[in-house]
Length: 347
View 1 (cartoon, helix red, strand yellow):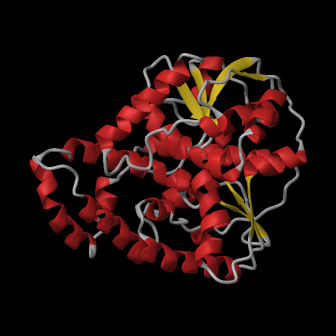
View 2 (view 1 turned 180 degrees about the horizontal axis):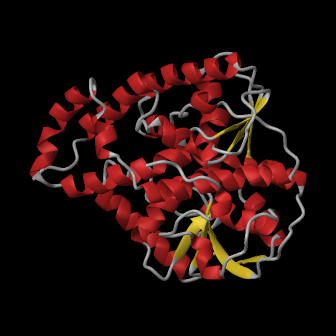
């Protein structure tokens, strides 16, 4: 019995980044479907940049599930052949066909973020097909040469649109554009802030007090490297959310099990299970700040533990067009995105 062949798996991701501009390319309709009906201006000096992280998570989940079944099986012996084929045919795309319902939900999170920024009076554009994957997984897995070449493509694309300021939506893209790109690129001069930092600065007025309590799972990247700890808590509290802190929170947060889920699925699940246990002892309502954390924790969470992205709570509290569901519905787990999130992404 063979483990997941690390070299060939990383090779497939590297080949995809070089040939298809993403480690796990998603169809255009899934990458951009979330924007339908939002009338986001194209380009501009300030843009919302998703780095395709929310869009790619359903593909990562699908890939992880399939690799977990292969771990320790005879199928792992054929990854070398699969890598050679993948250079010509996107096999990763076949293995990483995500759940359309899950894709709709993650699209809803992005639409929440747009609503929150607009509610706060922030003007911004979007790059649509040029909102490229930032290369986070390539960085995490040490694919330095491929990352450097890809970063040059991303920066060149941003400059071609006249972008000077970027608003990010997740910790991985934030770290790439704010910390990693300046180290590998000459002349990199973009201003990069998370939407949470922008919202705190704008101080939007809540339209509803949610009257619920949660615990927050801090992203390792946000908490330890990007200084994003108090911002989401301040926004939640102002929206009437009581925060019950788990012992390992803030800079002392514990890993969700990523980004090793595609290389060591079993070990990743063990770490995620441990973390869910810590969080659920404090509250059955868990807020995440990262799409990968959300995916890893949900994968192992029992049914009575509801885990969702922070944008869900913030949209309920700050955006008047967002209906307030029952507390249990705030998780969005296993449900279709609410109608006010717009037209679902096509399968």
